[in-house]
Image (cartoon, rainbow, N blue to C red):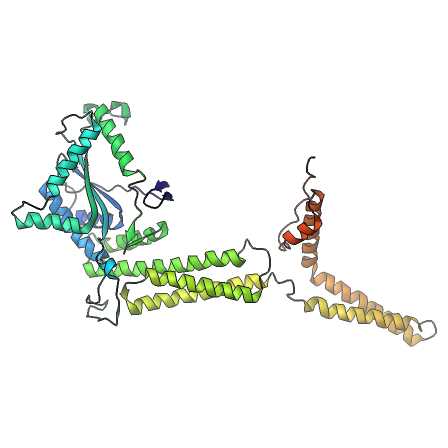
Length: 446
């Protein structure tokens, strides 16, 4: 976790991913395409490592892959084809906002040139940065290029990435290339270490840490995991899937993320109201109002995220979200009901009434038992009924009596430590049946 100035100083999770080499004698163009496609689609900061200079081939490869990847994450319009391959029309598509349609699909691209040999003064890091910035500005410039393909390549790159930069590192030194090199930093050239130090601080500086966003929204770590799983399945065959397939998969994953986000939002809200950490019983009307509020808020989050793709597909996932929320509501309702102090009161009330009636009748029957066998038999029967009744109450509610005993021990401990008894009674909830009584704390030292 590192702080991000872009996120107002909030910590964000930073995942650093390295890929295998590309454009060599061992990697096929198809595999290279897959690596480029997946890495570009899951990255917020894509580092393209090239040797000695940024060649026109590097730019053309990047433009081709970026433009292809763009088709997989660009918000669909109502004119796009539906999932069945036929035009769906305005009624079948959820229309994304104009701002979302015009948004650049990928975030930051940086060329990292290794073994750079053209610095005027390698010991002046600030000057080296200015020189490479000038080199990149000249390389990416569109104006003044007569060839249409050169202009088109640069326009494609600039239209696919929100920002582009470049940095260069000198050769790390001859000792690093030896077979006996053990990874020691001291073996690297001093100028290389200085440039590397500057580069690492630049990449991971708070001002440059931007959360990954898809469809204009910053995603969480769990959402990124789903996107990675989706994209790796698409590219598992080692070939580029159709752009429409990538787009459909991206939209489907976005809808699933919307469902999960809505469910988590509802759970967080209801946990505060009557979750496992809440001990007290909540009034049914109050709980229903809380459920209505958090349900509405959660579904509003769903609607905000799932704003693209086929409306039928979005409606289907929304129905799943509603069902999941309703299932959670049943769980929270049952959890709160179990805390109701009047729950199963009949198990106390009915036997207690029978016992009290038996006691009263036995009192009257005992007045004539000395001279009436009938009264004596009735008194004995009522005595048995009284004893059996209260034994039944005790046995069937032994857990509750244990809870009362634990509660009394907690109150006693608080009072023994100096707390007012009325404050203790007001702030202490009845413990659950599976919670042991806490031992009374030692009295506070004077």
